[in-house]
Length: 96
Image (tube, rainbow, N blue to C red; front, side, top):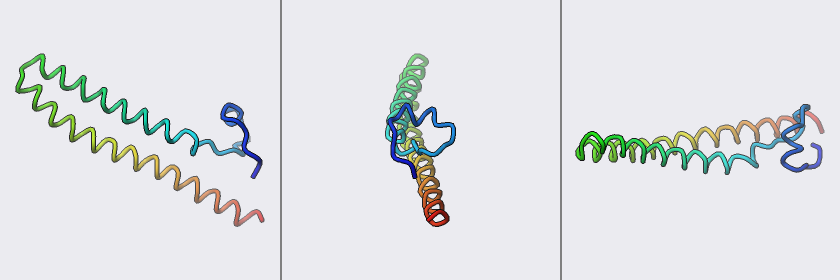
């Protein structure tokens, strides 16, 4: 495997010799959490404009959906990392 280059050089690596998934997975996870939090706030505010009871209901549903969404997002990111590790292992095994 070639030596690691900087992040921007990895973005324009058209031969796909450099894996950047490990570098961006942390940022993607943070973006997912922030997006989920913003969605919950928007959902609660919109519900509160209708009635206070609907705002509370939206808050409860929003919190549950936030945690489920974060769980699914984390699982998808871990799956992507797992597939990358499998590909690297196969590459090492087939190209000594």
